[in-house]
Length: 336
Image (cartoon, rainbow, N blue to C red; front, side):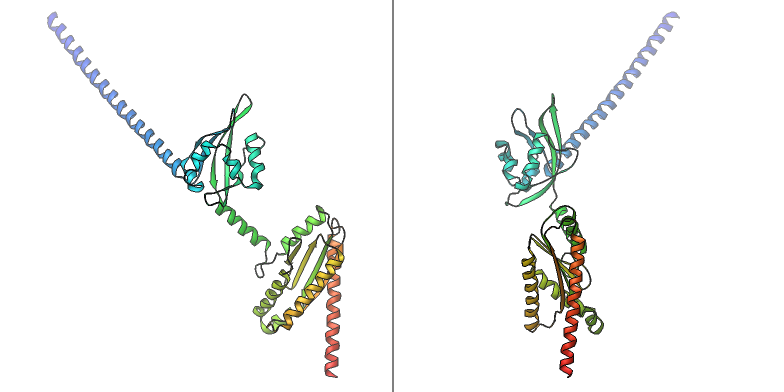
C-alpha cells in the first residue's frame, strides 16, 4: 500500500516537473522570440535612421576643435550641395569651412568655433556650393566641453534658400509700392526716422506732387491716372542711387530723400528733374507729366527731419501756386 502510494507521488512529481519544464520552455521561447523581434525592430529603426541621415537634404557633422581641428563625421547628404568629393576634401582639410564661407559671414564662423556665440539660437550663414554660388544655411550647433574647454561642435545644417527668397519677397512687398515698385511711405518713414534719430548727415528732401491727377481720374478714368503715376515713377526712379531714395508716399505725391549732399547739389538735382520732365513731354509721349516741386536742405539731419519735410512741402505748394498763376496768365493772353 505504502509502496503504491510512493509510486503515485513520484509519478505526480515527474508529471509536475515535466509540465513546469514545458512551461519554462514556452516562456523562454516566447521571451526569445520577443527579444528577437525587438532586436530586429531596433536594427530596422537604426537602418531607417541611417537612411534618413544619409539621404536627407539636411546634413550632420561632428567637428573636433581641440587638440586640433578635424572633421570626425560629415553625413553623405553634404555632397548633394557641395559636390562629389567634398566630404573627403573636408576630412583632409579642416579649414574648408573658413575657405568656403561667405566673406560677410566669416566673423560668425569664427565666433562659433571660439565659443563666443549663443548656441541656443539658430546660426545663419552662407557657404559656396559645388557651382560656386553662395547658399543660405540655418545651423543648430551643440558645443562639447571638457574641463571647461570647448573641444568640439556637433550639429545639423539645413539649406534655407527658399525661406530666404520668400522673406526677401515679403520684405520687398512691405517696403514697395504695389503700383510703381518705388519705395512706399513705410520705407520712407523708416529712413526718415533713421536720419532724424540715429545718423547725422547733410540731407535734403524733395517733394514732388502731380498736377491734374484728379482731373485725369475724373475725366479719363483711374486706369489712365495709373498710367500717369507709373510714367512719373519711372522718370523719378532714374535719379535713384545709393544716396537718393525715391518713394511714393501718397496717391499723387512722391518724395526724394537725398543724403550726403549739399544745397547746390540739391538745386542741380531739382533742375535735372525739371529738365527730364520737359524732355519727356517734348518727345511726343502719350502721357504729359505736370508736377510741382519743392525742396529743403539742412546740414544736420538729426532732430531736423520734421521741419525739413514741412519746409519742402510748403515750397512745393508755393511752386504749385506759381504754376497755376502762370497757367492762368497764359490762358488770359491766349483769349485776348
